[in-house]
Length: 288
Image 1: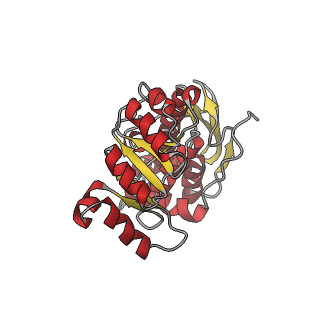
Image 2 (image 1 turned 45 degrees about the horizontal axis):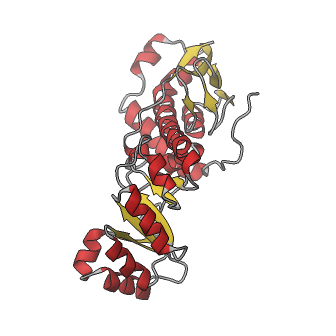
């Protein structure tokens, strides 16, 4: 079996199955797969493969597998290349064998999730590769995810070599510009957050200027989000921080600009488009 990245822990089935189940229910509607049920005899069998039609990084294999299993547990799903695997056109990702009706009915949902998550993984991998020669910064995702798919998309970021920012509003404090405006400034915003947050909750604050950065550091922010700063300003910000907080850069980061951002010495580079706008990777199901 081909080698693939093995240190990416799979998401618990408890988190993945409801997403897949909802997608299948949406597709099956009120009457099920009327096309397949009319054309394919109940006893028909099918051997097939899901293969790559372009270069990319795979993610979403478990979601695809669960889609076939939910329609009919008799479908045998054999994973050839798991999450994190790099593929070229023609590479087999999954082999399928079993009732033809079940395989054809689950096909689109399985491919939708697999192609989507592989697109996120591939976009992340491209950004990671572009940043790597220039610094130590990790590429991280944001909360700009597809509603209902956040867990799968953040897992796909990890499959592509990136890391995860907070998963939701409840696992970290991130003070944005509108919070600062309502609170009356960076210092009171951080002080209020510190008074309310538990001792294990990190506090990050978004800053647009070096003056705001100094204010954030003066009251002990754990991390600072350096928003839309030019590379030279980022370098000055990193020098000011001097290890007292995590330095995160954000703001329209692309493969063309990420190298200069990484070279500034920041710890993290956050990017929303790797989840909200990544193009899918083309994979298809073919009869073997």
